[in-house]
Image 1 (cartoon, rainbow, N blue to C red):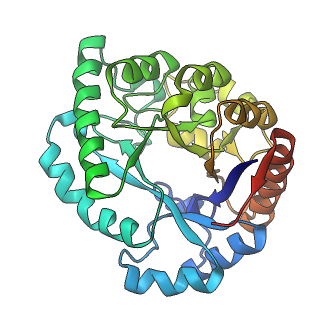
Image 2 (spheres, rainbow, N blue to C red):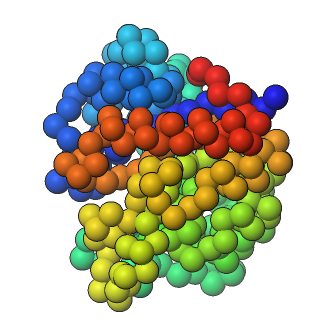
Amino acid sequence: MLKAKLGISPICWWNDDLVELSDDVSLEECLRQASQAGYTGMETGRRFPMTIGELGPILNKYGISVCGGWFSGTVLEGDLEENKDRIRAQMDLFIAAKAPCIVYGEVARSVQGDRSKPLASKPKLDEDQIKTYARNMTAFGEWCAEQGMPLSYHHHMAAVIETEAELDLFMKHSGAGIPLLFDAGHLAFAGGDVLRAIDNHHARITHVHTKDVRMEVINALDRSKESFLDAVVKGAFTVPGDGSLDFEAIVKRLANYGYEGWFVVEAEQDPKKAPPLEWSTKGNKELHRVMAAAGYQVVAA
């Protein structure tokens, strides 16, 4: 039987880009609620201490392990050595914490964190530029894996690799040295076919974000004026089972290809409108339902 682990991102409690979308809770309270909701893993965020000496005892207290965490990469600008220097401390922590991967997010030229930049102003590369970038990302990914901590590449709204076509080109020109984080919510937001993307790229998927979307919110956006963060504030994202995506079909498709590992809820919402404990519990219940339907055994980290 295939095994799945269920994790969650602290972005359900506090938002690193939009402070106003943050619950005023401590790391310990966040972990307590995540454990109560049924998760055994959490990705790191801004309230996490970044040494195992500090973080380890807190995680152990709540039975939570590190199941990933974002790194703001700038490999697009071509300076691998600068990125190696910046990722080192996080890499050391993740190795000590026995995390599965570091989530690589490309922030160079991205407009994802700038509320003044509309979605339509996202960076666009031609195929030759994607080819160069993909080769550099492969080299960086290989180096990270050699150090003992692999990356998982996060295609992302408002960033350089956003659409299904951009993802296809990136995957075509990169190598196995840079695995893929599959995020159905970001791909659906970008107009992609989530099941086709799994069919095309399953061999490289090593991490999964189960981000649901409200397509009625997304379809009403004026992308020439509204930003990625505007979309977040309006409620574009939610937990599995509350939005427009069919996670039973998504999880079954991943199971068909033998994916095992983490499924991580990442649903940035206004915690005043979507109380984190209530909504993370709802997402966990839906994931348990679809995991059973797809033949997964949910195991602790």
